[in-house]
Image 1 (cartoon, one colour):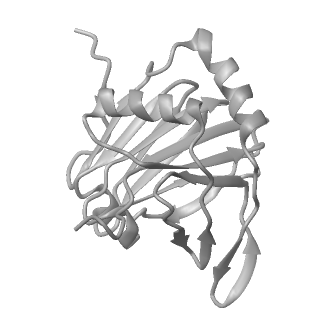
Image 2: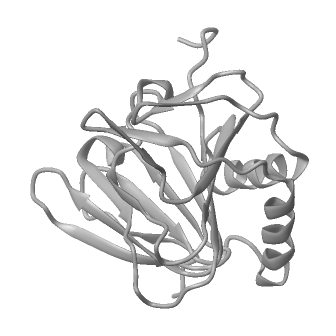
Length: 200
């Protein structure tokens, strides 16, 4: 029987893929609206004491007022747009988890990428659930276990949702690798629930 969800991780956490989360008849309009409404930024990441421009554009949205700090970058938030709020609520309905913020990423072509990392910053909580929505071009997403080195690969297609939870951020790292294959732009929305001072 066909299932609308697929578990990608064999152990130590969960990465549930929902290939048809958004209707393909709507994704191009959603993509263009986010492109137009987002004040895109290219922050500088600190690696080994040196600053490097991030390989891609991104913007941090949340109504909590919480800055997002990673890789030496401090992201100041913008107020959530109605469209991002709608997609966030749809992610909650599908995953059962609550979210209050989103990092919007733009991969302009195959040279834009993100290297191996975990979303394990304290602001995300101890075992965060992160909902990743893909719009536009398909890009390969790799997950690698920190101890065994086992690797899982999945193509994230237009309109898909990947929900990572449990031990996934503790035991696995993930990346979007560069590709020499000609590929169009992709927008990725990573919804998460950041911990505020009012929360335990």
